Amino acid sequence: MTPTPAFAPDAPWRIDRNRLATLAERPARDWTIEIVDETGSTNADLVERMRALARDIAQRTPPAPVARIAYAQTAGRGRRGRAWLAEPGNALLMSVGYVLRRPIEGLSGLSLAIGTAVLDALARLPLTPSARPALKWPNDVLLDDGKLAGILIETAWNAPGATAVVIGIGVNLHGAEQLAAQVDDANRQSPSAAIPGASPAALARAWPDANLTDTLAALLNALDTALPRFEADGFRPFRQRWTDAHAYAGREVVLIDQGQEVTRGIAAGVDDSGHLLIDAPEGPRAVATGELSLRLAKERP
Image (cartoon, rainbow, N blue to C red; front, side, top):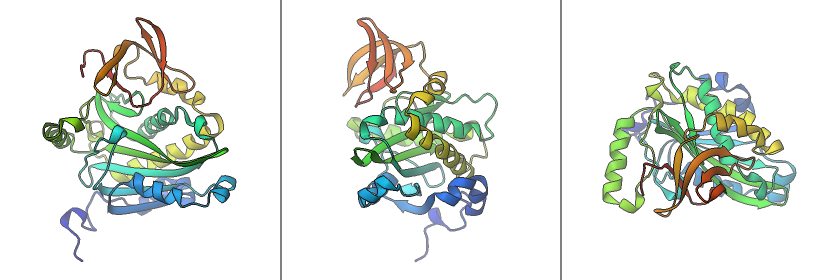
């Protein structure tokens, strides 16, 4: 079968496995790394696979982490079921399957810890000195107030001493204007599926030569460090890093639940469990992630 032009084997944006093996030295040796042209959802693929593991064996001897990358997804999604839109070569779409030796109640703050890992990965790339990536609670990475990356964590199974998780990460590399137009069109056609929050941003804004290979290698290296650290100590060692990059620190924010304002106040950081701290009129609040959305107070539902 002749490949479509979008998936031509010599497309310049394809991941260079030789370069990847050089840049992502330990993960390239120790992780299972799969790259496919297209799938429904890399997260769904790995959730199904993780559920098929022999849990008693996986708890005693966790399998090697597996990273699955697709150039295109037909059913890609973000938090709260929102569609994740991307053209082949314009975004890094990846998921990581990992068995953490922690009970499910010990995973609080994991999405925030992964956010700091994304920042660490970006720090390894040749971004312009003026670039200031930031973190938006609970799972977005911003660049110049636009959404650069999103994180979606799903649980495949849990046991008293271990939890199998799938960590989805989408990073926009190019085509922010095109993506913004697609999002606007989707919102007009289906207001219930509208994506609130920041407009899309692309890594090319801070790195004109942004490419999938180097970005993937940087993420693999950062995750290879962050995941064992979280497994050992939870979110606490990541808290200061997250706080230092908090996009809305000291600003008035609004918490939204299903389109309705729940509360507003001054964003005061996060606690050791990754709960958002808000100085609200009724007093200090610590907010767990749940299905809440966070916006600046000037934004209205």
